[in-house]
Length: 555
Length: 73
Image (tube, rainbow over all chains, first blue to last red; front, side, top):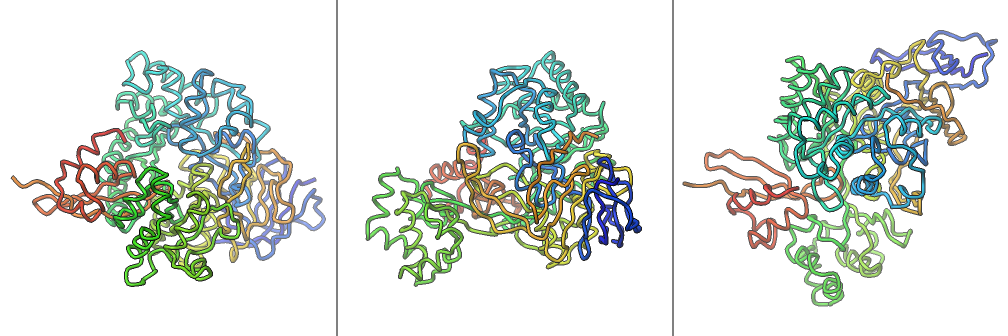
């Protein structure tokens, strides 16, 4: 008996070739038949009628930080319901293994700096049962509903070998050799590569340990990656184009010298630095032409700015009076915001001549008053008989400056620039950061946004092209040979979706983190079934299932 | 000898959803370069330049920017 039969599907097989209609059969976690008609008499435990819908390979997200979340939420909610069936985690130099027990607290603080997860997420939500990488993978086995492709973080690797000196100095030759041996053991256990960062900071805003490595150290570690043909992921100094271009050159040298793929993230567009992406992409193309593999990761979603009046966000740096007051000590700041004269001065500065356009479209991102969330300051101001600037001040004071505001689509937002970039053959669609920055914005639904914004609305990519970019392309880039295509014999990771409806839902705050911590999420729309290794993991009709069919996707 | 100066400073979104300051430097040969500063770096630059706003950074010597960039990010 077959496990699952999917009938009447529009099959988009991940290769980029044109879609066609047919059935799929799944048995023993593998695709047994793709295309053609499966006899009506064939018995199956589950039959899915996909008429009018697409059956595609499960989506692969190459840039996530689900390292901890997977230990209490093996479904990586809500990534799975968006059709994501494989995640790469351990990015940006940070992984939860290998990690000595005495270094846990220090590493957790680094994770929190990026992920914004509460202490309870690391202290109560799971048991630290490992130190080595194999032990961490053992903790995941049988727990996960999607496939995980873990990276080894350069930061814990250094901490294991160098202790506190990892965050003080370059490594000595014997320490580099010890790191090589440790990395080799991690790769043998199932790691898909090494991640490092030239940007990230710890909770004290000090550089993370990976940033103290000299090139000789990275070169030696890349040599070990070369033994396995595995990936080097890097966060370059993306805030400076010249340095990013230099890192592209450096990655290319490592790629050529050791025969490894490399990838860097993020690469994002802003109209304030319009030549950044073109310059970096020109150099990427030059290096690919030499035979190097240096994949830039580009996200699909635009970038928002969020802020509260509790901090002096640079959002206000072009409004001197606002910026000056917001930099003041808290009590003094609140007193001034309550002062009628100051309030009027602030409003006049932000809305000269009664022009309220500066703040009118800002939205309330988080508030104790749920009825305010998602509404614009313009709407709220009209109700309350004030201006948007006045509403911002009033709302903030009412909640002790705890209200957060959102300036949407401030960067990476121009579809005429982003669409062609996403369609570029040398661009690796990724950088979702799933599971990170959880209190700042939702990192879920980038795949749905790819289809809604860049396939349906903008037509920058065809359906088959878009599917290829998030299935077989990442599978080949990362060497995940069993995934990314609908092909008989391969792992049965399948997503069934409506190509006319797939999208990301509205961003909304939820308090579902361990200890009641909040995060922003987005639900999926237009996705109907998600199958992982032959088992139904989520459906729009039934939600999440008990399936725990995810595996360590190292090959 | 003329030295490069800050030509402009504009707010842009950073990768993590926080606002950053994009500072453009103009060299005396007409060439330009840009760098993004986070909130702490931008605040220090404003203080070092005795500037109240981004606009007041215009014309400041790039030496002040180099001092910021030399500090750990």
